[in-house]
Amino acid sequence: MCESSSLYLSGLKNFSFVSKKKKKSNKLPKWTETNLKKTRTIKKIVCGGGYHFLVWKKPNKLEFYQENKKKRKYQLPKQETIKDIVSSHYTYQILTESGKVWSLADGNPKNVVPLLDADQSTLEEIRPVSFFEEKKLFVNSVIMGFASAYYLCDGDQLYASGTNIQGRLGLGKKGGTEPMPVYVQGKVTKIFGGIDAQNFFFITSKPDLMYGCGNNSFGELGVGSIGIKSSPTVVKDFKGSEVLTVSSGYYHSILITQKGQTYSCGYQRTNGHGVQKTIFSLIPLLKQKKAVQLATGINGTLALTDQNELYGWGFDKYLFPTTEFNDPRFPTKISLPGFFTNYLRSKDMIRIASGSSVCFVYLDYKNTLLQDLQILYETKKFCDCEIGTLGNKTPVHRALVECRTKLTIEQIQKKLFGQKKSTITKEQTLNFLKWIYYDEISDFGKLEQTFDSLKLTFPPSVDNTLERDIAQLYKDDNSKDFKILVKNEDEEDEDEEDNYEEIPVHKFILLARSGLFRAMFDYVNEKKNTNKVHDYTNKTLKSLEILIKYFYTNSIELTANDDPELIVDELSDAVEYYQLNDQCNFESELLKIKKQFDLN
Image (cartoon, rainbow, N blue to C red; front, side):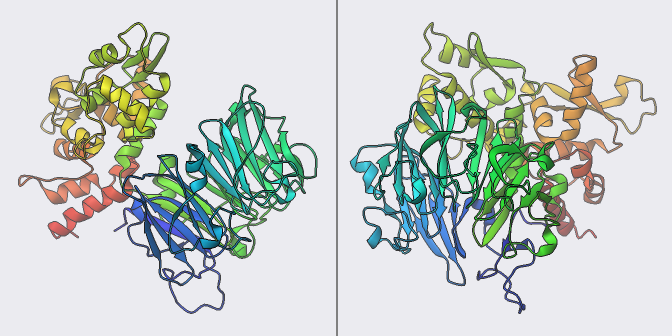
């Protein structure tokens, strides 16, 4: 039986949850599975500079793991919800939705970002960073580098703190202790760094530029030259709007564009080119790949593609066995353990993290329904209506929107956009749709206004979840807009429509849950519009009905009249044939049936 989630690590084995079998080396076999409990609740892992890391478990719980010591647990005040966590060696900073920053540090000035009360900080408790509250600043995002931190406040005000050695704070020749403002032309929209970075990057709008500052000994700022840049310097080859993310190591930087192309610069052994680069250059071996995630440590980089292929380069002997890479200077596809690389089709099922002495791959199979619907939202395939203002409308799937709000599309359109001067912005509409499609509430204030306009209760109650709404939608035959035709076993003539039984279903469910049906709809739409499709698998009507119900409920349910052996046999190849994301959960459901009815 496969678990609902897994956590793998590579590096040094100084952790209590790793097998304590005697080994000559302190180095782990590549991608060792841990025995950490409840890994499916992990939101993010952040690695420190040594043998330690911090785990974020929603909504405000944290766990700290350090070598062979007992883990520490932390919980922020109940009114606080974690938005992000970042790290630099023995300092972790936690950003909450309220715009506050919290610090978990060991108080060592050489290893932590200097805060007002740094000498009092310990790993025993999470301490609030009072500076921003005293200045009445709302912190939107935080990134960290080597003994440095950067804060984007109130939308566009940039602050830097820590040590200003090699100009890494962008403050010119000024020193750094408490946060100080970084002055630059334009509104700062995004900031980027890395656990071991001696520099940082940020993006501005109007002008649409990317800046870098700090150590540039090997050209790791990508500005076309070598040498320290103590003030923000323009990275000329990219507009800010073209950049998805940037991640810095000790002597190299990696950039992913909005189109998923991977560029790098800096030290030859770690930049993926094998030669030193002083400008961001496209990595040849990843030219045909679309990257979606980065994890950069002191010497190496992990990159995950939209096909869930994991590439690594630059890592030294402590993080990977020498057999992992033919040549660590260039990207090498990493062989991940288990089945998941063959079946996972959602980029949100895999997370990667990298530190100085350990790196992780962690997988979440907890709820592939949400992940499937998120993909449907992002691709916007086969939408059947729109919402929004004239000239700025967003395509949606009617049945899903109406099932979540209990309002018709026409009612939603009238209440939100019926006035000549609608107060609902495009951003608010997108936040609303993220809740519709995958239960994400990213901006409470803006989403609350939308809910108020629709006279919906905010925040949504614990009963008003996507899983519950979709399960209830299964029972709503009136809104089902599609049919699967299944051959009647008693009829021999396949040409007559009367010889087929019908399974009613919502089209968006088939689109979200099955790669096979998505491909079929692509083919059918090239020919003509239709509201039905034939199933030629020769499976029984009952087996397909159970499969369709699984699409809605994530569970396989049998009645007293069902033949469990036949159902298990016919659905044993459903994951591969129908191209489902959630092999793990589906096979677990089949295994329950086998155990219940003692099937071999």
